[in-house]
Image (cartoon, rainbow, N blue to C red; front, side, top):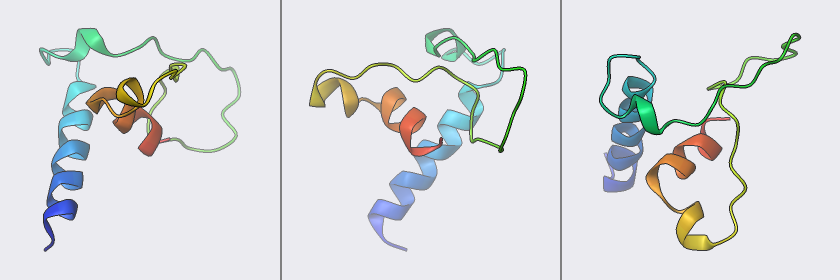
Length: 69
């Protein structure tokens, strides 16, 4: 396995664990979308933030939110 795939898998695992209410990082997640109709299944149900800088976009949480849409 390549190092990048290992890092991607670890990020995905951490993000999935963060979505559990008892996780210590659960509080930093954005609000959830309130949709009545779900047309297709998404990787998460959180509101996507407006990213204005590359540093903000490259942060762990935003990177996970946008990669797991």
